[in-house]
Length: 532
Image (tube, rainbow, N blue to C red; front, side):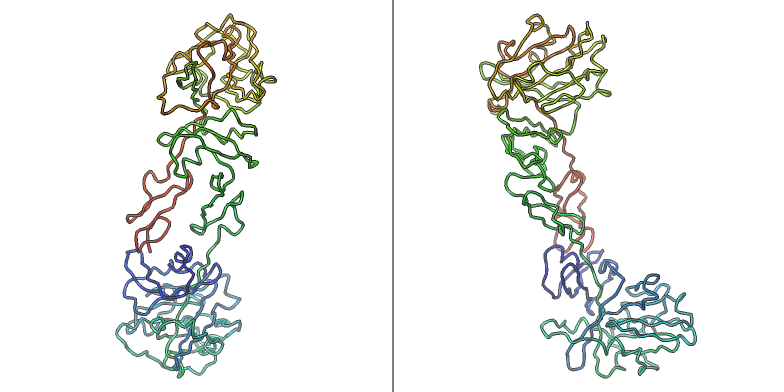
């Protein structure tokens, strides 16, 4: 439709080829203004018109006239104020359901139909009529004859209209008299002007084009309004808003910013944006402060690792989409690297999914090294309220359970990863438990990572692991073969294009996890390329 052309960036008034829902082509004249316009159908059209696709408002129409001297003029036409709310204008293609039937419909059809009042309202005596060019043209329906329309005929067989009376009534030529001249540069081609029939009442009048000596024909313009989702510029951090449809938009973000509104970014945003190469990326927190992450991409999911060099606050909730598990990488003394997944024991997974914090531990035990080595990333298994019991606790890593019984209700159940900006050494208070399988179980089950997939040193942290009461306490330097560990936060990406919602050969492009754009094949339009 002309509306689709407008949204697609066309702003030049003129003739365009569009398609109906059966993918049949026809021509329209599109008249564009700022966020609205009018659609005029060519009289040469020989396919069905889905007229509901051509307008968005029934408040008024525009009618253009073509005079014998080829000059053109236009005016807006609407219902009288007393009827506008209950009876907005009604438009049909080659039918008139509920309205009076045009006299010339058989000889000159098909036709475009502009209905003012349906039969149920027009068959009364009260004042009726129309409004044009800001003037009312009323009449009293003397005999309840329920005509209230203008019909525009395609006249495929070049017949002449049938006429019988009342052409001199002001009502019949009022809309013509108030029409204002159009500059020649804005004239439409002849093919957009139709023979017409106007019928009002019962004592309102009846007229056809040839009864108005100075007229060759008239054109019916359907108004469409284009809502601009970019009107209030939802794009943040200097991003530029680009309308996609009336309700969706894309943000062209400044360098370093991503996200639907360039509001913040993450490895997930980078993935959705089409970049799937593992590596270091600069992203921004919600205060527009930059820091580095390592993004590890897989098919529709991935992991985010924060750089130890980070000096700004981290909105950690933006970095993951699941708390079912995390991935931990380790860096060994020989610079080889390994990884494993870590999760809660099955008995706790539903009630207590893993919890992640940046430099806090609300409801969980506090790391011993938090003051000296902080800030820190916190991986919590059980909160204090659950960890201060004797029942079996622990964690699962690499497909194996590592349980223990909490012997003294000490509610520790975490691993903390320290940024350690002052290069301090971790505090340790016991070497007793470091040899327990619980403390190095996750290290022992870690699988080596190919050198090509290694992360740089600045993603590996000193860490502190504390379990129980009789589970153990260990820091990085307790494990002779480990330099540090990295916490990988998992994100999952839903693909709205998975089942390809685009029709007629259109290509789907993900915009967000829940929205998409279709790049339609030639001749197709619509959100899903479902019609023209």
